[in-house]
Amino acid sequence: MEPFFTQHHADPACHARTGCMILPHGPVATPVFMPVGTNGTVKALTREDLQEIGFELILSNTYHLYLRPGTEVIAAAGSLHSFMRWNGNILTDSGGYQVFSLAPFRKIRDEGVHFRSHIDGSVHLLSPEKVVAIQCILNSDIQMALDVCTPWQTPYKKAQADLRTTNLWLARAAQAWEAQVQTGYQGKLFSIVQGNFFKDLREQSAEAACAAGTPGIAIGGLSVGEPEPVFLEYLSYTASLLPLEKPRYVMGIGTPHYILAAIEQGIDLFDCILPTRSGRIGHVFTRQGPLALKKSTNRLDFTPIDEACGCKVCRTYSRAYLRHLFKTQEILCSMLASYHNLYFLHELVRDARRAIEEERFLSFKHAFLTRYYGDTQ
Image (cartoon, one colour):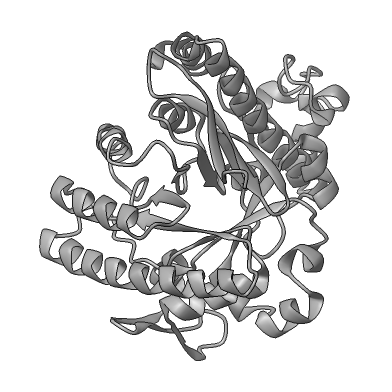
């Protein structure tokens, strides 16, 4: 039987590596950036757009899909793939972060989390077993175990208590997932390392995540408000605790700087809403740094967003035209800017994979960030 994850090449100068995950809806080359399709759609893009760019894996959200349209609708459609007409792979997060950030009422208990819907106020219980079952109905190619995400500056005792809950839930989620696999479910379960910004708790969490025997492991609790030096320190420290034979996923990072930092530490997957959210407010990536389309300097600029970019937006439209769309609040601006931003990050990660294969990742990273940030980096 072909292994789920295979490492192809490691750069000898750092921890960066390339590999491949074999998933039910096709192979996925790593490292890989995943667009976020919270409600079963990546905002402002069609599935044809995603296929055209070349994405093999996208992310969707268990919490939102559970509340609306509901598992009954998706079960009747056959799967989330059928419902949204997406033939590629889908990773679904557990919904834990959304429960803790969106729900106006929540109580964490050993059995699960009780919460009140942010949509209509209805009361629900998500247990680790129920979250696994929901993601099996979605037919997720990768599903995440329910965890407790703690923000920056959480006190030690609170982080310790939340980690105990996360570890308890993980053991039950792994058991529920294994039972689903016995019935024919082919999706993979990822455990999540928490522990806030306490190294002993990170060690305990990594030990529990490894002991659970899940096919992959995510690093949670980063990019939650901490300063950049703290992010980089705990990214490196946590990654060092994880086994090389499993894919590693850092949740919620989408700036070029953080993506390249993660790749340097041997991270294989990452996702973020940033490229589409930025696109909707007229902010776009260029190789010379971020660009705000609304700036008056773009009014008579008939060059593309990025002259080195090969996306259809840059091949077709000028900065002046995109600024006009933004100023007149035309929906097309969100569509084109979001497309460009996702294309840009997809190409960045593709180029990073090539640099790793050629054993020049660190020089590639330095050159890219020097050009992107100028003298500020």
